[in-house]
Length: 582
Image 1: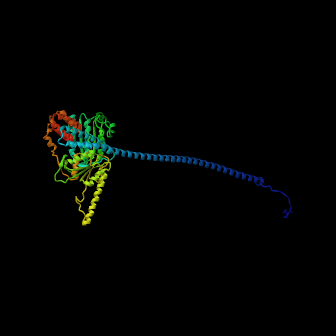
Image 2: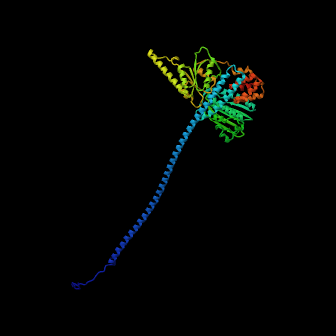
Image 3: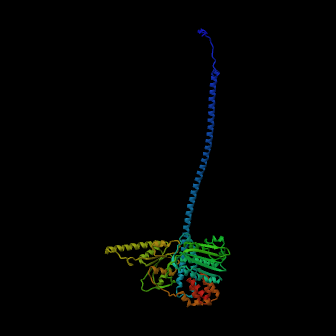
């Protein structure tokens, strides 16, 4: 409109509006280019991150794989080592089993060898000692004959002692050594040892002290023989190796356990030797220098003490003496009747049945010993040279007693005994059935209705059969070869009930008072001391040599001493010497 308010006329003209720079094509192109660059950069960065991550993952995988490979290798090595160890263990186990089997076989072979050796050694010894006893009991023998027989007896007994020592070790190693426990007089045992060793210690100028506790019981339950052997071994060693001072034996008792200690003032035992002196055949330096003994005494002693529930200990130092101590179970018991001295059976008492005795042994000399011994007192005797012959004689003759050797070539004594026992049972059952059919009341159990043969086994082996096996087979008892005649008659009296007339005998003290033994004090002191030393250690050979010298001066005294040595009455000899020295 103009100033007058009039509308102006329309007019046209052309113009163009330029956009801002940020909206231009170039700007948008730039935007697109930048966006593409950003996208490209993002993709590149992402790709790089992914590659880097992949590399890290690959590195970790490689590291982990390497660790796994290493662990796999270690595991494989361990598996190989385990397999090798298992293989070695199996090989060692097989070797151990083989070694054990070899040890068992060796032990069995050793036992068989010792059984055979025991049998082979004891069998001729049985004949030697048996015939020597029979000939020695003949009254028409001259003095020289009796002297020769006494030498045979002593030599045989000495050899038997050596065999028994070796077999004792073997039986201990095989676990077959057992105790023979009986009630015995402990105080008498110790007193007897003191009397035996006193002359020898006096001869060497040594003191001998037996210190017995007041509470020591008189009667105890134990193995008297093994305890005596242990004490003799320890006291004998103490006397043997002590030249100055003396020996002390101390005995205590508490709650059923007895403690003993033997102490000497001898040369002592070094610490190194103490570890070996209890081994078989081992000897200390003093023992080797003395050239005495076999080196078995301490070994046997320790094993006997262990068998009795204790152990031996030694306390010693070179030049300071030795002390051996041990404890064993010896429960106190009530007073018992003392055993009587063995007496020789002369004949059967009159008024008894005619007893039939069968001697079964494949060795003629062994049969002859027993047969002569049985016939000499009045038994009817027959002999069998084997098991089969023994069965035939038993069936035809029906002996009251069979002396049955265990080892016979055709049929051993165990088998023969079982056959006899089975036959006896069958015969008794048959008579019982007949009696039931006839009377309906059966057969009364009397000695006549069931006649049972007494079978006493004879064995010369320490290992072949033990007592349990022998008795289990049906034997009534057993005797070990070589045997003493008194043992034979004691078995017959116990099982058969036979009564014997015995040779008259007086007590040792009564006999000593009224015989030539009273003239001991008139002998040279050197002879008395040497005889006392021999009696103290039980050396029958040394004692016999001295007795032979005495017999040249006093035949009567020498003869009595010969008898005592033959019977191994060393305690009695020691007592007589002690009285003579007083």
